[in-house]
Length: 211
Image: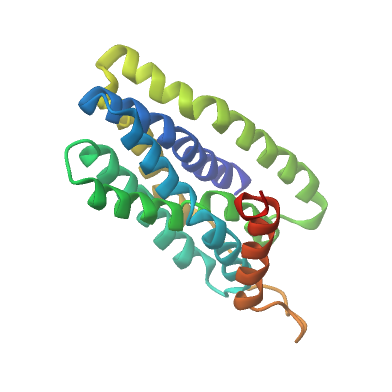
């Protein structure tokens, strides 16, 4: 099952790593306006500050993570396809809203790592986490390279095609993963509200609000 997990997770991560590059190339090819691409990337990034910790927390505690993972991955794949198809052609406000949906759902590609203990035996977890690390490294290189490669052959306006395909194929592999219920948690387990507050405080303290 680790092979199925790695295939699904890596393809989704390739898509997630390449979508920003694809947006820049797509908008530049259609409008020549680099500022629009910058606004869209910001809209994809900002929701991540809160959605990332929340998705990881909920996915780790839910008894049926497959359903939630599928829902989030499908939302990410659909939003990516819509954004790359309409960026530079639709009103900026609409494109920003779609980009924000990507930012709210994309953290699933990272949160999948927390599901490894659900189906990987304890004695194999170290190896599984090592393969996961390689998955992130591969995606970080392959994602932008894939978008740029398609752009060099078919033009920047089509750079997102392979990115969307990678996300959809990764999504299709998720239903084949088996998951056990989560282990019992102590009563003092953190709540979603405390995680959101902590994430926001960390971002403000070490990010833009602290400058």
